[in-house]
Image 1: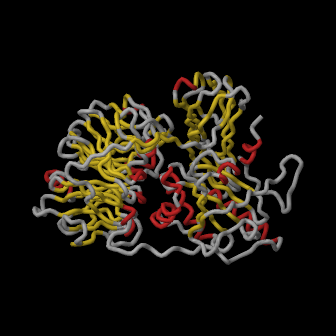
Image 2: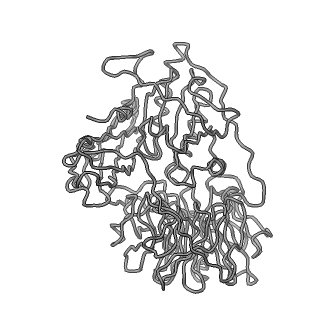
Length: 624
């Protein structure tokens, strides 16, 4: 039997009439908010005071690129159902840093969250709603009962259909409240920079030297003197958007070699993160002249999990002379990509889209939101943020990990690299002595890895989410994103050792029995849609495990959304099941010649522990 909490992993019940209680499917009351901190509201909210409204809970954490994609998707629901629907973000932190109210408030502003947010640092609601993955959405009807729950991206259009049914049904019953949306946005941070992300030093046309800063919160690039404060010009309109001179949360920057720039007509490449594009900038006149649609460039490209998703969230870019390409940290799909500006060819350098940590052949490797790049000869160093890891890819096509253990291991600990810990690093730079500087973002620190001694040390601390690094005349300049500024916190000869604890993210672990496990991904197309198998199978399920020996049978990909796995190990053994499911559904109106189609996909990393009393079944929801 599935544990009782797992029964909250509900199939959609929106077609039921009001009120509905059946012996077979009794409705489940949505758990109430505990006391805690609220943002984007005038006063704390409760489900009781929201009776008569449709409520959508978004379980998210701000380190998670997939969660940020969902925040974007929710803007459509906010616009279309603003009178009837109240969206509430339930911030459910993965990392220690994310528990802080100050950090949540900053993230809410940084990512343009346009609805109330509740901070749940101890994951009380996560456990009460039996959530298993970031992001997860829970829909609650005007009577206060759960009617749908689903994990992953791409759910907004399916949820919209259910919301429309609920509006029609409760409106007809006279039980629907309109208006009185509780959202109250905070005042934006003032200043020349707003959540700057990364910076580079410009060469060529500016022999005296300038810095170019990705001013993510203003959706612009800012060119400054080398002091990082004296603004010379802004590039981009400053209007968040797509196309023309608009950008959306730009992050990474790199400058092309002069011969390449002369041929392609631009010299700066920008990771236009929220648009899932690269943009080419001609620094001579500050014009954005070129667009690379990453999803289009990878059309038809598949990995072991299927087609590469379209929401790639490029977080950093770097020119890698050893291969003559721009390397791209595609955080949203856990890949390293390569782009050849002369030909426009885009390819996968490393990763499979499985989120995890696995070294060896790059085509089989696992990454977790690579977010910062630095080039050192035949090595492409990258900050693998969700693994809290420092890793590199070599020109032989192999992945190596220097610091980091996996998705749920982190901390602030110096010493031998194999025992050291980081916490969600986002930026890297190669220092003049050949060592690697790390923007250890969630520890608020700058760290140094010395390849000669294989030691990690701390250069500076007490910074507000440092996210980018750049060398200027032998001095390390830090993009202190949370403080909206560039600083020089490292003094000559400064070095310290921090022997903090090695920490772990302790999400609620699913107790499973060793032996056969029946895995079922429950997929129900929203009203008005059906599975689309006109051009082949409409579903796919991919399973693997960390460590691999945890799963003795059932790994790999199949078209069925149900499978028998075999778990191996003694009682108490822990690990993670990596599960990717996708299903294609299309509008079912027979009068429409070319119906709109939708792909639902979700990646789960399910922490498990083998137990004699554990379940032999695992059910996961996927909403179309």
